[in-house]
Length: 115
Image 1: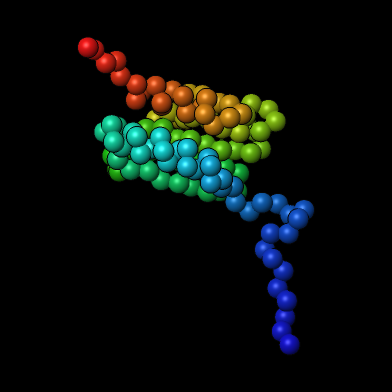
Image 2: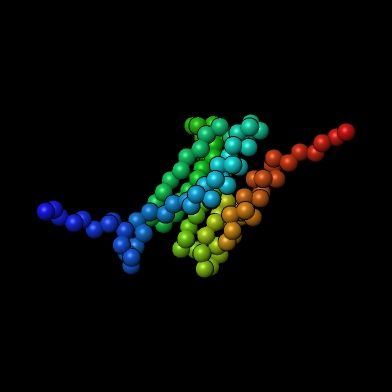
């Protein structure tokens, strides 16, 4: 008949690539869309590697990213798998949940309304 090929990811094998789940990516892209509408960001990039998934947001395409949202599952038990990294490479916020890690960026969207 034919040869049976095993599915590439079998139980017990190491994950070849870290990625974002649908709800995580929806939350990140929602924030990105609001930042674009406010005029803060213009471009983004995603990188998926063996140990981390990274979402980078840029003010302009040719610059360094203004912020990076990193997911590192290996740090889940210690300091949290989510990190918000600034333009200079400094970790601005780290945690176990995505929402509190994105809070510093969310605060930039808040404006006082005067009557």
